Structures are given as C-alpha cells and as structure tokens.
Length: 102
Image (cartoon, rainbow, N blue to C red; front, side):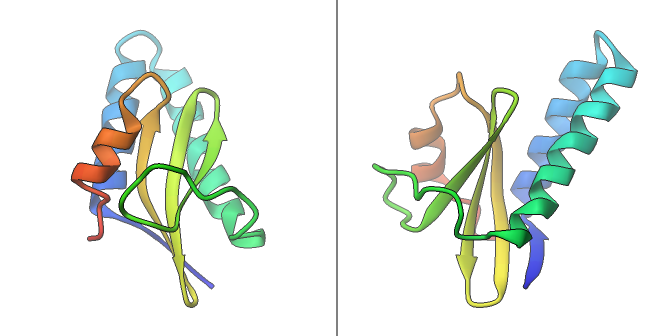
C-alpha cells in the first residue's frame, strides 16, 4: 500500500507547526514528527479506524492524535491523508466543502 499526503494535509501540517512553534519550536517539531509517524502507521491497518458519519464525501476515516484528527481515505492500494484538523474545528463543514481530493 502507498501512503500519500494531499497538498491540503501538508498545508495543515505547516499551519500546525507554525502555530505551536510560536510558543515552543522544539515541541512543534516533536508534535509534527508524532503526527507523521501516526500517518505512516496507518499503513499497518488502513481500515482499522472508523468511517466518519455525516460527511458527504464518503469513506473518510479518522485517526486521532493528541486532539487532532487525521482524515484519510483508502482506495485500492492507496491511502491518502486528506486533512489534519484540530477537534475544535468544524470538521464536518470543512470536509464537506473540501475533502481534499488532490
């Protein structure tokens, strides 16, 4: 299986990094490292996390990591991480508007 991060997910990681780095640059790097490690670990059990209910773009799954969700889709032999969003955000609205199919 191939792991791919959408451009939108990569932009999300950059935004998270900059936000945390404003207070603690070293912690920001560790946090992003943790998020990317969790993303890579999805390849071990790609269908091991639940499909998110209530999103028009179907078959989007969620894996949690320290208050953030990695939203991804499995299609054939490709796992694409679509977004990385904080749980306090309106995730359903963001994914309905732009599920990041890029």
